[in-house]
Length: 93
Image: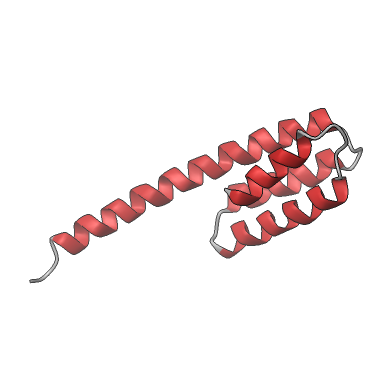
């Protein structure tokens, strides 16, 4: 979430530093890959294609896609954690 917020902050600047955006997208891709968030990882790959022409509008579209995928994965992860807690609560005493 922090990385996405950092990218959003950069894209909201009058002059976008696309080199820093690139670094952050790479970090997000690495983080999502390490936790198995394939859709977030794929959205990062799409993001990198969008900022190649250094188009702020295309980057904002890619950021929206990455946010959607992140929110979906986070929601599923939270549901999984709740199920884990419920299973643990009913486990052997």
